[in-house]
Image (cartoon, rainbow, N blue to C red; front, side, top):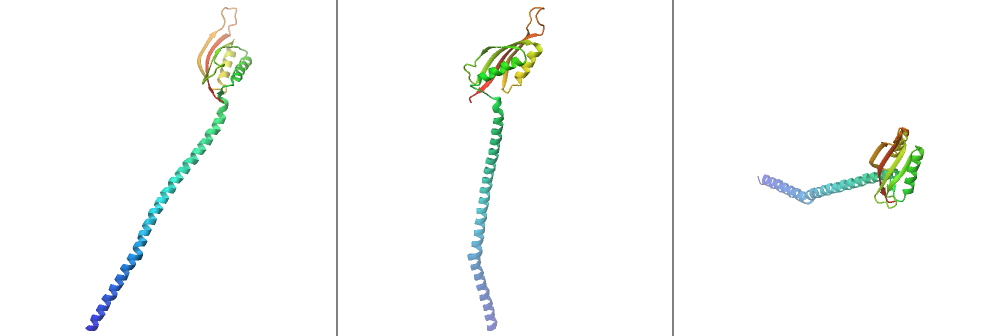
Length: 181
């Protein structure tokens, strides 16, 4: 029985030693490893969020850069439509060429071309045959500049039966937006 007791004690001692060693291993190796893995997982998640934010910012910047390039390209296209201060002679020449092309008489009644600000105001009278006046007006609307017709008055230009019945007078008040070169 003493032998059995010794065997039983030996088994308990061995199991106790095994349990103590297992607890020591768990406490010194496995728990720190689990803590390290959790910490590493948090750091990885933080890094992932940081990289995602950085990617979104870079992607947003890239999209903005592309949009800026598109706007620059479209701005180059619209440069021909913008009236720049200092191009007053060019505007008058274009208006005179239109009147010559459509065989109408053009008179600039008033303007602020000598001292332009953000808007150029022109008051023009056009006299000629009705079809030519309409062609002049159509061609004027097709000019590259952004013209705003403030007032348009079309009236017959003949006063007696002996006058040309196609004679027409067109009075235009135009506004042209100007920009600095």
